[in-house]
Amino acid sequence: MRTGWRMQAQSAGLSRMLSEGILSDIVVNAAGGGGGIRAHRAVLAARSPVFATMFSHGLRETTESALDIPDMSVGACRAFVGYLYGDLRGEEFMAHRGGLLRAGDKYDVAELKRACEESLLDGVDLDNALGRLHAAHLYGLPMLKRNCMKLLRDFRRIYELQEDFHEFMSTADPDLVAEVNADLQANN
Image (cartoon, rainbow, N blue to C red; front, side):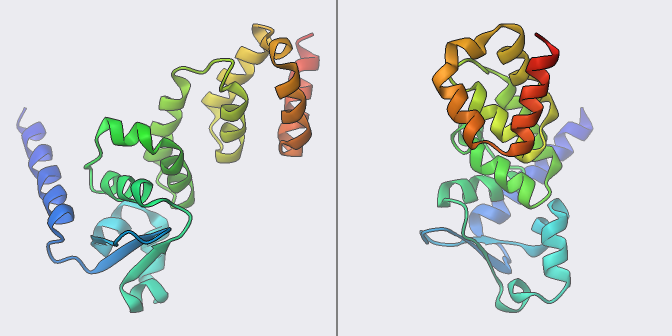
C-alpha cells in the first residue's frame, strides 16, 4: 500500500514537471509545428536508450536543446512524451496507438511496444487482420502475428478476403509473403 502511494506521488511529480515545464532543458518538436513540448533530457534518457545515446554523444539535440521528431503528429508526440513521463490516459493511448507503436520501436521503449501489441491483440477481426499482420511483421510483434495468422488460417477467413488478400500478398514485404505462403501450405 505504501509503495503504491509513493509511485503515485512520483508520477504526479513527473506529470507536473511536464505540464508546467518545470526546469525543462529541451523542446520536443513534432511534424507540422504546433508548439514544442518542453521536456527534460534526464527523463527522456531514462526511458529510452536511443535518447540516452543521443544526449550523451554531443549530437545536435544536445547542443541546440531541441529534439525534432518529424515523423509523428503533434498529438502522437504529446502522447509519446506523456507516456515517457507516466502520464498517458487510455483514450489518448487508443487515439495514437499507431504512432506510439512506431515511437516505441524507433526509440527502443520495449514496454510501450508491448502495451501496443497487447492492445492490438484485442479486436483482431477480418477487417483489420491484414493491416495488423503487416504491423506485427514490421515492428516484430510475435503474439500479434500469431493471432492474425491464426485468424486467417484456422478460420479460413482468407477466402472471405480474396481481393484484399491478393493485394496484400502483392504489396507486402517479401519475407512476410513467404511466411504467409509457407504457413498456409503447411496447414492445407
